[in-house]
Length: 270
Image (cartoon, rainbow, N blue to C red; front, top):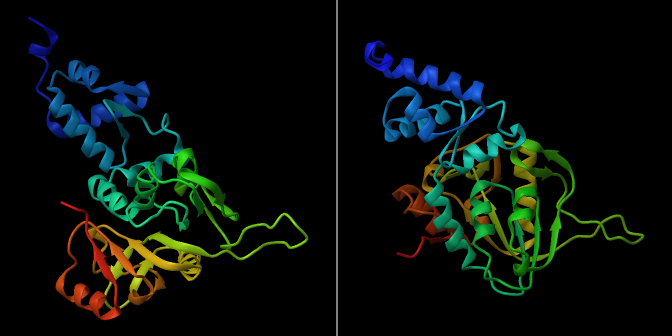
């Protein structure tokens, strides 16, 4: 008789605790390894890993998981947020990318939804792109841009972003120059009928508002989980944007407020 036949059956909660401890000790494991070790199906392991990832006990990866001590800590917060509403963000990013024309100057803030937009710009050409996203600057296809600028300031490692003035050095006797763009693409944390667009960080809100002010047109990107919420710092009123790019129709009160403010709601095609 095998040891697995004589061992007491584990309760799910107990298995999850043991699983989290094992991943932490091993550093990096695959679903197949865990299924064999804990004598359960691969689907069960996947569900356990998804739950443990959501609980912050480990970091889910394609085909397995890594312990928190193994995962690169500066990226953990951003990568976790990137796994939330993934399909919605990809659809929003593709729809927002359709607003961008070859040869335009665009300004893009840091965030997981705007990162999906950046990845969707691969077919564009000769863009001038200004951003505070360190991650976005590395993931934008080199063939898409003529010039790429990253705003200076303090670095927020967990978001891989800079926070500071929306200006660029002139490399002359002038310390900095103002900029003007055709389109600002701004991901926000919340959209509400009374407050407008808001986020959780005061400095970030100021920077995002400044980005809007430096563009001829403004597109706000927000998935439907951001609707009818308000966060600590207001970015701008609803009417400051020309477009709201989202994944689902807003609720009636918010839609009425957007219509009154002259904001065009753009949904993914199909």
